Length: 111
Image (cartoon, rainbow, N blue to C red):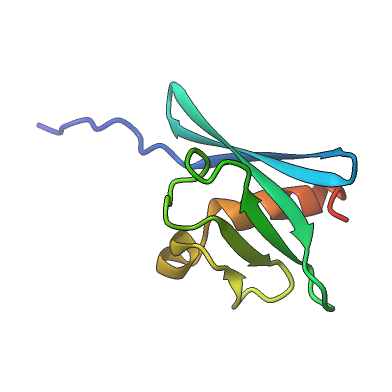
C-alpha cells in the first residue's frame, strides 16, 4: 500500500520596485504556504563599483524579513559566487533576495 504525500510547496518569490522622491523600495512577496504569503519591504540602493550589486535595508527591521538579527543585506548579481550576505544564501546557496533582484533585472527595471 502506498502512502500519498501532498506535493512539496515550492518557494515562489515575486518582486516589484517602487520609487518615491528618489527612494527605491523593493516589495518582496514570498509564498510560505498554499494559503499564506509573506510581504517584506526593503530600501534598495545600488552599491558603487562595476558589479550589479545592491544593498537591501529592511524598512522595518522588527517586522520585515525572517532574520531578526540582520537589518540589511548586500546582493551581487554580477558574481554568482558572492550572491547575498543573508543566512539563506550562506547556508543554501540561494535566497529570496537574489531571486527578487534577478526577476527585476530580467524585467529591465533595475537602475
